[in-house]
Amino acid sequence: MEAITGNGILPNFWGPCRQFFVRFQPEVIHARVVGPCLPPPFGGRVVGVILIGMMLFGLDAVGGYFTAAAAYGADKSVLTAAVATLDGQGPPVEGHRSGAPRPNIIFILADDLGYGDLGCYGQKLIQTPCLDRLAAEGMRFTQFYAGSTVCAPSRCVLMTGLHTGHCTVRGNADRDRQSLREEDLTVAEFLKQADYTTGLVGKWGLGEEGTPGLPDLQGFDYFCGYLNQTHAHNYFPEFLWRNREQVRLRNVLLRQGKPYEDVGAGIAQQKVDYSHDLLTAEALAFIERHKDRPFFLYLCYTIPHANNEGTRLTGNGQEIPDYGIYADREWPDPDKGQAAMITRMDADVGKLIESLRQLGIAEKTLVLFSSDNGPHREGGQNFDRFDPNGPLRGLKRDLNEGGIRMPMIAWWPGTVPAGTVSDHVGYFGDFFATAAELVGQPVPPGLDSISFLPTLLGKPGEQTQHPYLYWEFYERGSAQAVRKDNWKAIRQPMLTGKTELYNLASDLGEERDVAADFPEVVAELERLMDQAHQPSERWTVPRRQLPQRSSPKN
Image (cartoon, rainbow, N blue to C red; front, side, top):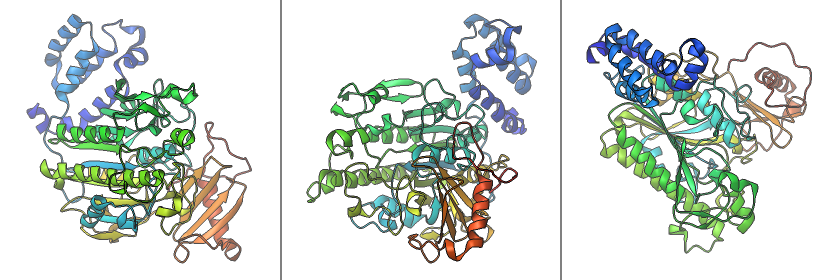
């Protein structure tokens, strides 16, 4: 192996080959590629490994595997063993423009955490010392945006680098519309091709059983957590998924014949295992297992999302084992729960950072922290008590700033300048291009993604800017929004509604609609909205005649 990797053939070739076998499972290869030409066991499994062996090692090297494949009937374990033998081998590869080895990448995503929910973003009541320290030791962004104003489309944008005008999942919907497609390229697949080990821990929401959106079909070597978003409402579930298997927990669901109970949602009558704690343990274990080679960990916490079903049944959807430092506050239980959830998550981020230090890989690891959309008022808590959207207007399901402008923290000791605040305007879709630059690979064509690595490296003068950012939303009658420079336009309903216009430089709270004063700006931003939206059979909106346009690039 060392001799082959040393000549540069394997790093350039093995990634795409390995990705082919992960993307198309052996059964699929046999059905789609080999077909009736060769019967099992001499179908896709054997032919594929033989081809890899021929191209990497020569004809003589494949004889042993061919014999073993015949003996084992080309069992899937043989292919797994072959892949496992090759996985993780080879010397470190240089990545980004500094010439340093490629870093580990950890993206921590909170769920429904508002712009003002952290102390470093102005929160006064909820304590978040670990994330505040992360910001003090790294970079805090003040103009970073989610991919959407609800869970699934925001995560789709993060994974695919495409905005909601033409990405696959543009809203929360049924299992088929909310699944990624086989042809979608995720950042996990891309990093896997670059010989990263990829892990997903937490809430996925982009594909369930029987769909092409399952994590292992979208580039993740390892998955533990929730597939279904409604299941993820339940913090004391009866099971979590580990790869494609259900892992039973000690919780017992209260069954009342509700349809959502079929996917594991609802409330528990016996509460033992708190899922958030289990996810933290899984994340720490993944880091420990893969500390010696580059890895990508996508850690999708469910905190502080409400258990919506619990809110309807009990009035309190902010589930947590105990209220911690807030137990003695003279607040209603949902308020104590909201605060305790965020502080608990904060402490677990601290555990993760400490683990990186103890393992000696802190300086080799980029950690990004953000939230999928704005804050909710679905758990029974007093929304005004904590002022979770800070100076912004709107919340989850709004395209105002409070629904889409997110806390965003970057930490990479020795590389990201400590104690810096960036006003760079970016969004979730930019993660793809940033990851590409980090690993020294070109950005795939057709993405709405611009690397913000120059900003992370403290070189804002080298940072490319978006001409505009775009969002669309399909609930509550539909809406579109676009930001260009400091102008922000919102049109509701999509395509046909009245457009509001705000100048974010002087009106961050979007309190003064100035559309009547700047009709030429409104016309320009409406043109951009028309350009960015591409019709989809999955996502129907009010129709009107649209101008001739080419594929948007933003």
